[in-house]
Length: 516
Image (cartoon, rainbow, N blue to C red):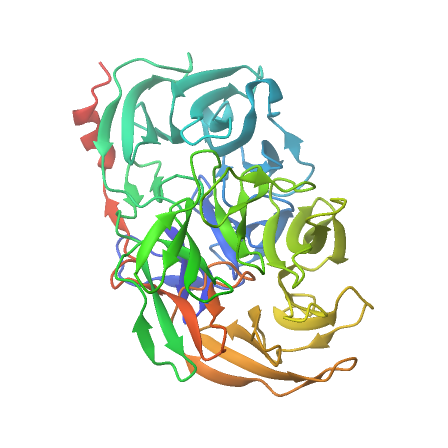
């Protein structure tokens, strides 16, 4: 079994044999966000935070880059024909596992309002591809399709479902309404041939794609995370590491952002954005069924609006919940908002292109929406944060071969200063503009900033070394209070990281869902 894990702040792949107790880290897989296994079990496929598709040999640990520009949140699959199917620009592509030209398999149908093809599963010795088509702009608008790779014929096999898996017992398994469902499935006819039955409840679900954390082996064993896996709490942490709870309500919180007035927090959880009244410890849902995959919230400086990412691009909405969310002109699917300038006019965001890893762009929120790159190199850049006075931008980059934090003048000239010295990411400014915070592993670091035209930066110093959820490699999964004296951190619930494994699960599936 292989999975993505975090230990002492380091995110990488781990493997564990089912007949052993110990997990084994896989070197060279740092920043992995998705993992899948080769049919022979000798190699792993992974997609990293910079959207690189890689393979790693379990025999010698050799990591090889197969392709670039692969979406990590929508799944990938390694077929028996030794080809890997992945998602790029919303459609499904396939590439030889040994490398080579990638071939596009599907095209989004604008007439059907298709937004994304996701969760590929290659079956029948590489002849048939199962996948999910997400349509419209409302949740639940997804269905499972089968594609014949020989003829190109597509067929809807399940309405309202996602995350298809094929069981060796002759069943289609998919996810709907919080549970795995099973049905007899005829591969050659590409159709369900019997009733659909709920077969497993209480699974943990991803925060943006509404899919469970589950995998089914060719031998019929099931691994899954139970519903309480991955749950977290929000906590205050002082500069000395003293912790104080913010809320007792467990959810899968991500990317908390304090409002400019310091009285509210916006946070992503379970595919929605929530506004917390800190004093009253109450949560109000900000997003609605109109947008899908809501995450990465950012406040406007006046605290009246919240910007966020959806599957179709960046949106913003009134922070009091009035009105409807509006698409940000000039935004594309895959853009990630980072920071808004002090005057509220300029948005810094991340964009992935076919020519580069993720880069830093800006666009005007009120003038002509013409996105332009600010930091665009072959390296991976992220975490762009405007300084409180709007004259500087802190960001993270792996241009040196290691993630480091830098600061540069905005809008120019093209000059930069290194902030971190031994690795770092997830930069955030103190609101007085005199400090930059960043993380390296479990450590929260701080650097003093002084000067105007020519910056002076102090040596980094450690504030605390404690485990909190890291999440994305570059976007800060924390925020800083207005006085710079404490941090909103995301803390794992005790025992929330477990995985359940059911050996020979397909025997239970056959009992619950007879194929004849």
